[in-house]
Length: 481
Image (cartoon, rainbow, N blue to C red; front, side, top):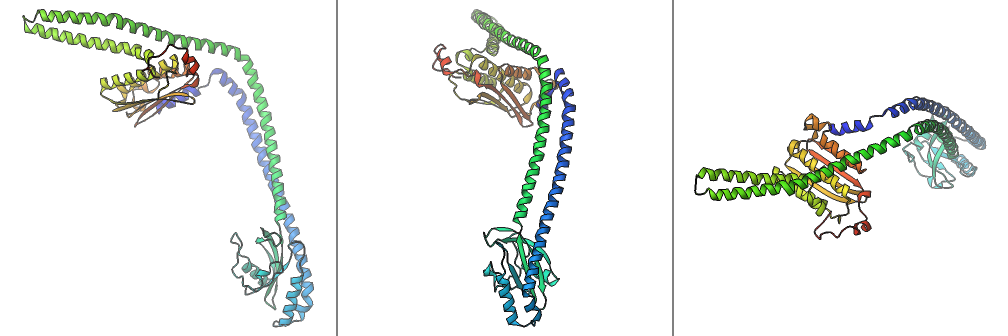
C-alpha cells in the first residue's frame, strides 16, 4: 500500500505549468464559489420568508371565511336553539335538519358531534351519522373527533387534519372552525380544504427554486468562460512546445526499450550457439579423460566426476540465462506457453507451488504486448523469490472487450514488508510501469499483509485483427497466445 500511495503522489505531482495555471485560477474559483454560496443562501432565505408570509396570509383568509360560514349557521339556528330547553328533542331535530340543508360550494358542509363522540350532522358523508367516532384519527395519527370536542368545550377554535374530500374521496388537508352549543353539549363546526393553498405555496417554492438554480447556472457559466479563457491562453502558449517534448520523449523511451530487447536477443543467441556448444564439447572431453584414467588413481576419477557435474550445471545455468534474456518459446509458441515454461521453471527452482491459467488468444497479441507481459511476469516472479516469502503464486491471462489482462497473485508478506528500495519504487516496479505506459496500458498493484496482486492490462489496440493475423506465417498447430 505504501508503494501504491507513493505512485499516486507521484502521478498527482504538478508540473511548473500546472502550478502557474493553478495559482492563476484558484483565487478566481474561490471568489466565485464564495459569491455563489452567499447569493444562494440569501436568495433561499428571502424566498422562504416570502413563502411563509404568503402561506400565512392565505390560511388566515380561509380562517376568516370559516368564521363567516359559522356565523351564518348560528344565525340560522339561533331562534330555535335560544328558545329551547336542554332536553327539547323537537328543537334538536329541527336544528339538525336546518344544518344538514346548509351546504355550500363543492365540498362545504356543517357537522355536529355530541360530547360523547356521536355524529349528529354530516350531510355530505352520511355514513358518519349515528355512529360514535370517539378516538378517530386521520391517516397521520392526528386526533380528529376528540380534539373537536375538546375545542368546543373550551369555547371554540381551529383544528387541522387530513380528511377525505366528499367530491373526489381523495385525502387532503382540512382546516375546521368549531364552537360549542353548551346547553345541548354539541360541537358545531365547518371546514375548508386547503389543498389549493398548499398547491399555490408549492408552485411558489418551485418558481423560487428555479430562479435560484438559474442564477447559480449563470454564475457557473461565467466562471467557466473565465477559466476557459485562462486555459486557452496558456494552452496556446505551451501546446507546441509540450507536443514536441512529448514526441521526443516517447520516441526516446521506445528506442531504449527496443534497444534493450535487441541486445538481449543477441546475447541470448550467442550464449546458446557458442558458449553452450563449447561447454558440451568440454564435457565430452572430460568423459574421455575419465575413461583413460579409470585404471589409475581413484581420486582422479572422483575429481573428473565433480568436474563433469559442475560443467553440466553450468550448461543448465547458461540455458536458463538464455531463456531469461529472450525465451524462444515466446516467439515460437506465443505468450501462454512462454509463461507456462517460466512459472514451471520458477517452481522447480524455488520449490514454491504455482498455478497457471490462460485463455487461448489464437496468437492475436502483437509482439510488443507479448514481450511486455512476459517481462512483467519475470519481474514479479523475481520479487516473489527475493522478498515475498510466499508459498504459492498464481498467474492468469485472459482477454476481454477492452483488451487483455495478466494477473499475478502471491500469498507473501506484501510489498510493505520489502526493503526500502523495492517498497518505494524499485527498478523492477518502475520497469513494469514504463512498459505499460509505452503500450498505453495500465498497471495496478494491490498489496497487503496477506499477499500482493499485480494486474497488467493492454488495450484492444494491441490485439491483432483476424485479417492481420491471417497475413502472418502459418503457425504451428500447438501454438497459442
